Image (cartoon, rainbow, N blue to C red; front, side, top):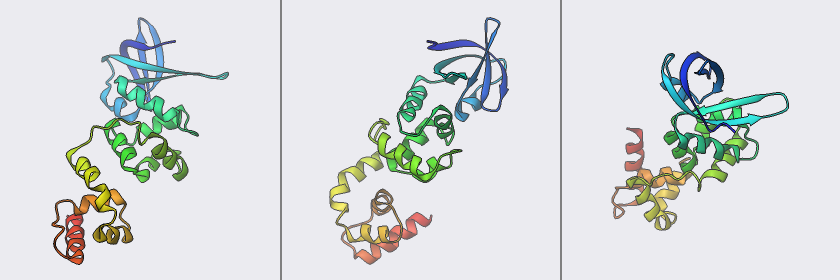
Length: 194
């Protein structure tokens, strides 16, 4: 098994880079985020995932080990193969993708080539608890207020307008709960329009 490869970036073609390791050129598929960071002539180290089938032996490479781990988590989702996992990683940086999974943003995941609604939903359902996001202050406030927010009429009103629960709770964060529900909803709508 190949764990890492180090060498010169000899060529870039599509999402494939050719890594020259002491005269041997390895064709390695990399996510779009890593591809943009690699330049021909650079000396680079890539963490490798090998995908061996009867008809092919594909190498997938990642600049950061954490990105490789996220790739492997995506492979654990039913219906996601290596090429689809690379496409999903291409929707943004690993941090953006983790945030999308944690917040249930299936629309962003669906922007990946070949990913439909059902696969995007499975990715969210199966990985939401596994992506290991560091909780931001805003998210922490949302988690603390979740129980009380679910019964909040303003949250329910925003959800009736098409907001997801986290978006509705986030839009209302920081708006005084003592003012009338209608005014809170109006302020939230004005705030999210900014």
